[in-house]
Image (tube, rainbow, N blue to C red):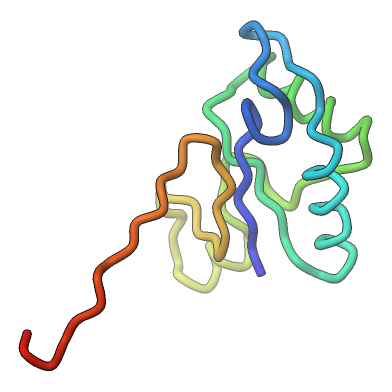
Length: 109
């Protein structure tokens, strides 16, 4: 499984930009366990440059490293022959997410 996870509001509480908030240790520990079983974790954030480095460092200090940062996994780039702008994942964790559910269709439709 590939998990794309946002930083601000997910891996850490929303801090005062560009500083980082308090780490979400429960989520960090869960992602560490998933990586140990072979799943891949991508940091998927709007942060860049120094602000991004602060986010990566906070996670690393708490034991979480990433298989990619704001990028697709190398094996997917090779599989598809390109690197789309959209991060490809099986699960997206984002504090701004909205789960879209479609109504069930009946035979009359």
